[in-house]
Length: 230
Image (cartoon, rainbow, N blue to C red; front, side, top):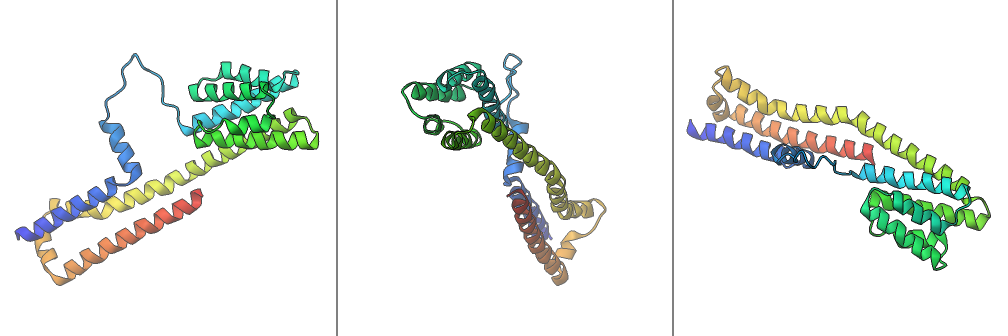
């Protein structure tokens, strides 16, 4: 009898470890076990979405300053003074110096985005491309950058809506993954002889088949969610 109970316990522990090994579950566990920040440090950690929004805000402010006639080097210097992130501030200052030395705007921008996170660097890389097209075509850079800023915001809104839409299916997958494990515990609570069940051939076949189907279903749903977010 003891080996059957040991098998059930090992299965529950193994499945629980597998679920907690999921990156999302691990992040939640760290969030629950990490010490709370002190009241004297209320600053919220800036997420990639926040930094992406800050980069788009730089594009919008650059449009306003260019429309009042400021040269690009002065625009970048002014934007550096308004930046809330130190990495973004330093990148804008380096862009301003490059512009003062005579570099074209698209080269100055693209050269100094390496210190930024990918979410912000992508915005500035697109800004450089739009600026280059504007100079090549002889179009006002401010107008094209304004349209580019609108496009960036629309893409961010679409990504946010997609994440909200997929939150429900992702939660459903987690709940359905836990249900077979909870059913074993419920069977113990209502007095089911799990040891006798698992000692039989049909019980072992059902347990093994259920574990395989659970794993396949979990992997399949992960693949579907990954494709939906791509």
